Length: 317
View (tube, rainbow, N blue to C red):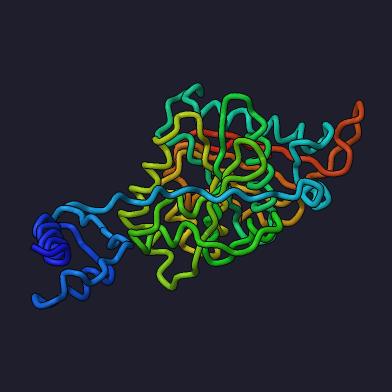
């Protein structure tokens, strides 16, 4: 048997064994009458081993993107920066976050389901809810024992990425509308240690239905239970201007309602609180409240808050 005939026989055996063979030697089998003295190709054929029938190819591991946040720009915008010197604003948020963290970690007065899911909202727009959500997330990121995820859930008018100087990106709505998109694929890990961001994602005409869907409930369960030390802050739409916020509030363990001092109408605040009456814990945060100077504190603007369980909210604010 000539060398070419032996090579052809070997290739046929490989094919029967489930091996894909490509290259000139496979594509152009020699005729039976070929001269035995003809030169045999010295370059071996390219052999690709095929997966067995019914065996799926290994899935690619989804890796979260890493982004840099300009901390100098953060400070210039009046937001809390982890590397900035101690400030009145940072001290105020230390006070604000403490009861929220206690509830999130199950150390509050009463156990709270999904206590680590915290929604920041307002009655109407212009109250400073996004400013509050970002600062709260930044403050919690400085904790030694907790990590934090900031979710831009204001799907009609997202602003978190813009305020942080970041470009638009896929996010929450993309995970809800496309089963092939994993949470880890759209989540952003930031240069601020312990802080990650989930953008609102691609705009969708049925955003309200998506937030009320079974897929959203499953996603929230995953987010709430996957990491026991993680606190998730949701920047949501105003309660009295959209229906998305009310739907989202029904899944939250804690809700922070931001009220702008000397601006928000009292009846709007009452209606907003009534809209989230089913939420276990509600906190009212008074934004831009003028305070008197005392021992170097209280300079400029300050924050006050009322805190309550069930249907009652303290009148401190």
